[in-house]
Image (tube, rainbow, N blue to C red; front, side, top):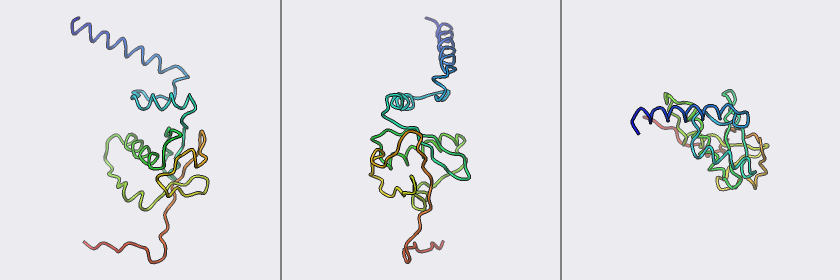
Length: 148
């Protein structure tokens, strides 16, 4: 095979993939899905994972796929990956250490403070909604101000 044959074959395969992605059953796939995204969507179809929405008022929501065996820590990692994927230019630098120190996730008016809790134990189901909640410090528990 020559290089021209390889390029023609590559264009043909890409055209077939694009045609498949137009099918209404595959509408929830991104234009360039990776292996993890495909495995997650297969798990959703088998009932082993959930579509979850993370509300970030006033910012647009984040949509993630979470397996039933995932923990709160895994959800936080998925949120981080999705936010980084949404901000492809990488112009903004987000301090995730600060975010998780100042905020926590909330599900049905219950704060998810323990990172080791499994999603299925929390009662999450398909299309559940998580929200960010500001963590209030107990009296006298504030960190000292930093002086530079």
